[in-house]
Structure formats: C-alpha cells, structure tokens
Image (cartoon, rainbow, N blue to C red; front, side, top):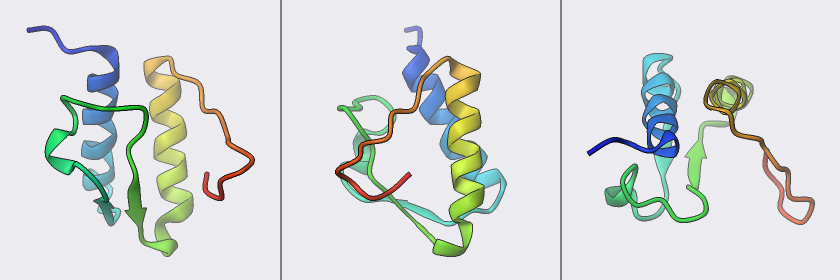
Length: 77
C-alpha cells in the first residue's frame, strides 16, 4: 500500500529528530503513529532542543508541502 504524504512527512520528521539526537517523546497514542494520525501529534521535547526541533518541523512542512498554523490560544510553536 502506498503511503500518504502525511505519513511520509511524519516518518521523515521522527527519523530526522532521531538522526540529530534531539530528545522527544510522543505523549499519546504513540502506537498509532504514523499509520493512524488524528488531527495532531503531541510531543514533549527537551527545552534545550526547542530551536532545533522548530527548525526540523518547519523544514519538514516545507519539504512535504504543508503549512504551519499557529494557534493563538495555545502556547507552543
């Protein structure tokens, strides 16, 4: 079965975080990632890696043709 663009992006994202040795944890339903993604993936990151993780996320979005929307009511990216 062919992977969706979203699945490819999620796989790439976590492989890149691991390759760069950035510390992260998927908070909920990690056993479903990347095959059954709802509307978001909650991850916990080491505060010292914040800028590097942001860089990877923004690059991933551009690479796979996604846009990043920042919610004003939630603190985060």
